[in-house]
Length: 380
Image (cartoon, rainbow, N blue to C red; front, side, top):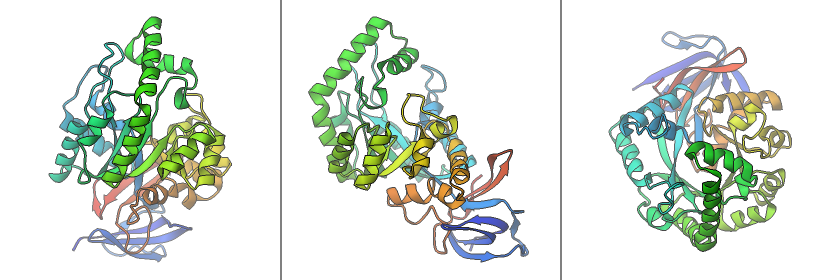
């Protein structure tokens, strides 16, 4: 039997905070009690927050470890292990690693090749070998504006731990990149295109959407069902786009770009997810709706770290302060993403729940993770 007691802590429970202790035995929470006593063998948390481990639904962090500099391909096993360790260190205990499916191979300048199946195999192999600290699932980002989506998705199946399939439509002038100037900054800065090459890229992408978009969208929806994965929309901008997402059966919406779209999601019963960097920076780097505006309007349900893993905890604390309700803020990165993906065994401090737990101190307004436990085993 393995047992850990976190005592004299500020427990962030589903509906309240409680000064007390939490007991973990053999991977589950077995007792929650009030009081400041510290029994023999218990860890004295000295009032620090103890909350559920964070659940991350959409992160680009693995890409940063695999390609730490442009055109530098780092050894994948080392990159995956480092990515996993970083997430554990900032309190993330469950992650859906985002992998792109759908490639463009015919454009010699703005091309990107297939990688998802091979990288998924490496992640799953390291998990099977016990090399990873936290719980990993896969999130397939289905690129509608691509040439190979159908073939790439066919290589995955129900045994691949695919929890999410998101519909990604990066057609120039639409959704995230309604402002083509923002797209120019992103693409030209990343790939070094000239203006003429950028204009060719726009034309090529729009042609791909016209030729294959409907097929790719239908394929992604059908494949999500085959995998048993939750379908997510991405960058919905209008109420009409949200209605289409709802007709596909989307369970949650990633980063709606307008207040109109977020409100339409609420009307259709689709949970709204926004990026923590948007919230912390005070706005979207793409010029879209600010996450704080949606939070203040009651239209924000889930937060993702997106491209800054440590932002997830900071966003939860920030929302707790904004709403004057810490459990509500914490739920956006724990219970809500867990519920959206069917992981109801975690994301909340309740007796019988999976013992994915973190200890957090608030230092100079920020959250400092002082301990991370996954199924009751300390991993950071």
